[in-house]
Amino acid sequence: MLKRVAVFGSPVGEQIIGDIIESNLPVEVVKLATENEWEYPDGTESVIREWTEEKLEPYIGQFDVIVFCEPEMTLSSICFLNRLYPSQKIIGYGQSLSRILNGERRVRVLLPPIVRRMTRYQEMKCSCFDTEVSEGEYELRPSSGSPSLPTIERSLADFPGGLVVIYTPRLISAKKQIERCVKWRATVVDMCDSLFRDTCKALEFRGIDGRLTRDIKG
Image 1 (cartoon, rainbow, N blue to C red):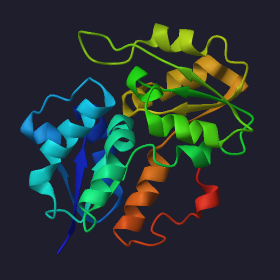
Image 2 (image 1 turned 135 degrees about the vertical axis):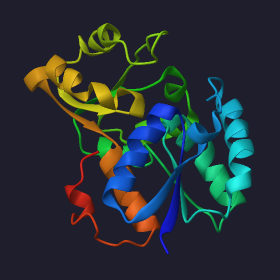
Image 3 (image 1 turned 180 degrees about the vertical axis):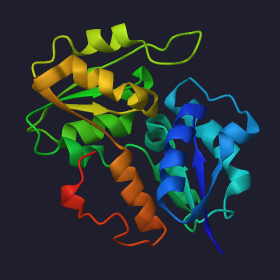
């Protein structure tokens, strides 16, 4: 019997993360929010946490692993929910940010405005005191919900070089454009590799991606 994985987040995040897991692992993937047409919240950290708990509660215990696709959910809710439901494995996009930051000289993190203000994000940022971390925010097109490339370009215009971290699935589709924007000045990574490895570990599919933790960037 196939193990079951629920992906939970915005429709864009669920599609990207869900497809990666489903294409590479022998599991059944269920996209919770997309199937139920829930409106993803845009509010404070506590609002997101309360909404996430409410929507997730009926599915606790039904899946081997629940994957949060958005850093907003991961940073606001995952520690609380892991304490509340210790027998349910829950992982999330962006959990390993401090490992990505550590050892880098200069990093520009592309993220939603709410994430920048979250307590856990600030804790991870401050823990890497040898790294110069700055943020670049972006806007979404009202008509399509896709990222606005001019705002992304503006957020990178003053970045002298180093590492650019895509800290939201909403910008993964624009990764090539971001790479063209920074050219030779920076390396661009997202958090999908780390999330995939965390999923393998939670499912006890050890070594399925064939790489050691030290070889993963993003």
